[in-house]
Length: 131
Image (cartoon, rainbow, N blue to C red; front, side, top):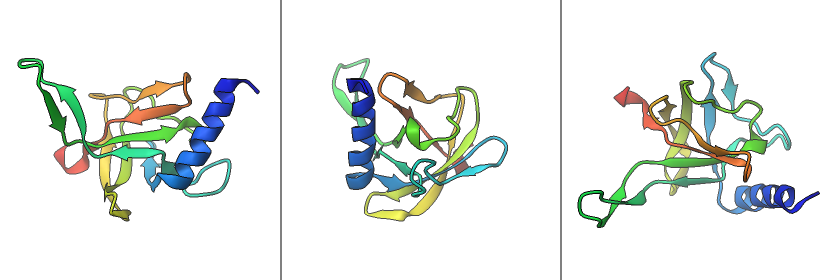
């Protein structure tokens, strides 16, 4: 096993155990993914960021964007969302209430990023009632 493979396994094990939150995914055909194929545990996000900082292009000053970013280990998914597909992703509205899930959408406007290099993808969901 090479270092990259070991890192992917360690990242999934440590982050799912210590930082993860439950999520569900529903693919464009209506199939629900909520079980981790390897362990039989609930599908969990490695991390959900509820806000992030970017630089304001006009002023150069950092600003906070209040939108979720969901990070999922590829090894947890039997089917990976592809660019251009519309998926439903149910995520917690808050880290303080991780079991109350709210519907969001994965859309072509902001496709998933990441992949093979470190074994996870980042999803930029949009609130379902906004679509």
